[in-house]
Amino acid sequence: MHHIPVLLHEVISILQIQGDSLVVDATFGAGGHTIEILKLYPDVKVVGIDRDASVIQYANNILQEYHNRFHFINDRFSNIDKYFNKNVDAILFDFGVSSMQLDNADRGFSFMQNAELDMRMSQNDEMSAADFINTYSEDDISKVLYFYGDERQSKAIAKEICRIRKIHKIQNTTELCNIIYNVKGKKKEGNINAATKVFQAIRMFVNNELLEIEHALKKLPYILKYNARIATITFHSTEDRVVKYWQKQNRLHFQKINKHVILPSHEEVYNNIRSRSAKLRGFVYA
Ligand SMILES: C[S@@+](CC[C@H](N)C(=O)[O-])C[C@H]1O[C@@H](n2cnc3c(N)ncnc32)[C@H](O)[C@@H]1O
Image 1 (tube, rainbow, N blue to C red):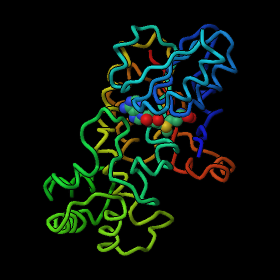
Image 2 (cartoon, rainbow, N blue to C red; image 1 turned 90 degrees about the horizontal axis):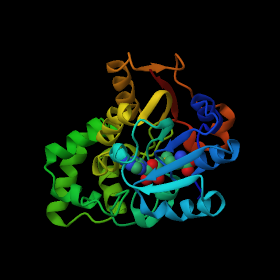
Image 3 (cartoon, rainbow, N blue to C red; image 1 turned 180 degrees about the horizontal axis):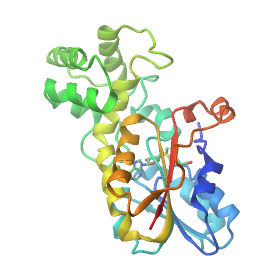
Image 4 (tube, rainbow, N blue to C red; image 1 turned 90 degrees about the vertical axis):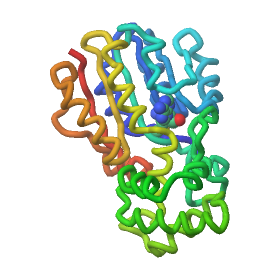
């Protein structure tokens, strides 16, 4: 499925883009936010960044129409200071995975389809989910599940992973799901699948997602103009905590635009269930 951009109008309103601004879409994905910005502001330039090379097809589509106002960089956003020098007027981070990544069975992100346990956002990265599951210690696995996934049964699941991997290598998503269901049962937790938190935790660890966010946010003073605007969209509490903590530590220079976090409307959640956990925050660099 195509990725539907989340909180689109709210992001536009936070970024307050003007004239010939330079805007960075640090998590380009299918370019949903980028396209809207290019359409709305005829003199603005947008640079899209994504670590996943498979999104280049979407970047190429945009280039056909906006070749003089759009540029794509295939890299991690923690390297952002390599490309800009205090010249950015607005930046958007829409963290997490895209629908294309989740829905493409071959990528191994989803517990809904059987696939090799990969979960790497970039094929240049070395460690896959299978490498992690089959080589890390029981204690490390348990900590990852607990801290990145808020998984309460982390110890029991890590123990079961280590028991099974002694018998055979754990290679695919179905094997991992069965291990999780053996421990927790198959019953849904609220409205999420019993495997959701474990899959999320492993994905976040394999892609070093929290450190990526931390590093990128720390580098903002090197790339932004004064009065630049920042929008962050997070999808769960672990990510949101990193953003909140960074803002607290840097509150003199990064001021909140809205007192409270912005959530999707009922209508947006109805039309796009994946928006349900999104939280938008906006900041001004001063
Ligand atoms: C939620 S999607 C963005 C969707 C996009 N805003 C849209 O509307 O089409 C997140 C994207 O960020 C990318 N991404 C995640 N972590 C990244 C990182 N550290 N550096 C660069 N890209 C990253 C993922 O590969 C994914 O394509």
